[in-house]
Length: 424
Image (cartoon, rainbow, N blue to C red; front, side, top):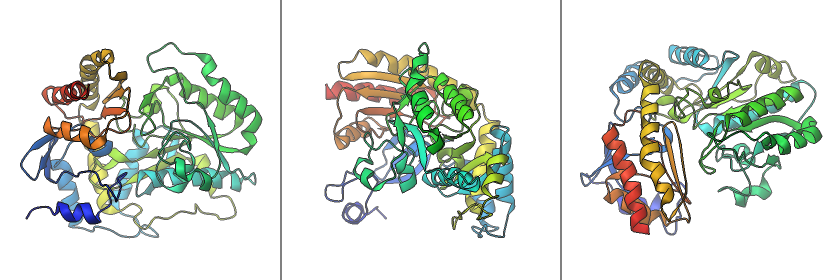
């Protein structure tokens, strides 16, 4: 039975797509390894890890088995007043693999909700101290999700959420860090945020940031010393530090978590995307005992959040299997190999007339063009070349599964070069 793409075009609203002039959608019938198979039989090498989640690739035997085993027991039970082995094992793993100070785990449905949970934790923390604070501090060009709290801490002027800014709380934004990951550190990078904190710290509940790599806000990669500086300033003023590692966590940047590049521990950590290896939607917000106990010492006596599908057993079981597979695999060697190949094959594109910049860190490769191209046109070129790369704005980037081979990765980088030549 073929996929009814005509119905899809007329009735299904895809992400970031017009309902009036919908972008073409390519019907995928199966996926295996790092390949997506279209209905016409064409095979595409996936350069996106399905929005950065499928770090092990597709149709992974260990994850399939974990899902089947759990499905035979129970797919879902409420987490209010009930616990189960899948959640316990997953939280044990998360506590063991993250910073030593992060002892409490709140499991939710998606990355955006993990950020909402983190923001609410910070607000309730200060409320419990009888010092209500309603403001957050962050940097421009960031992205933290599409729900309202998350949109509020996403740059209101340089993001896809610009149209909502009149409806969102007004938080504090400073310039995005400019010193690149591999450049000499410029201490004056911290001047703006130091000045703002000196004046406004008593209004601020927390600083929230994507460590080292800004994702959908521009795929910018910055110096670890900026993150160190934020930790020092948060400590100086007694403000919480939230690390949004939804995109960067689980090895993507070459460290298990991007905070490790700076050697810092956040007070609250947001995780998602690759948590289940791309099988099911699941996220986690981790925090310290101090933050958790303070939150629960206030008037409410509890943390006021409770998703219906919190700690869904099926998702937790797959997540535990995914993290076990990651930790038992040579993930760091694979990511290093990918990084070296991306450096060798993408960096020469810097001289291309249509290219403004090339950036690489871990299993992330970014080609920033001098102008934005029509997404449908560029997408069609990539599909013709046998790869799945989803550009946005001026950014053509790849974040492939860690199991990709050298030949497969070369096909992705070659497709980017060929697409640029055609567009020229």
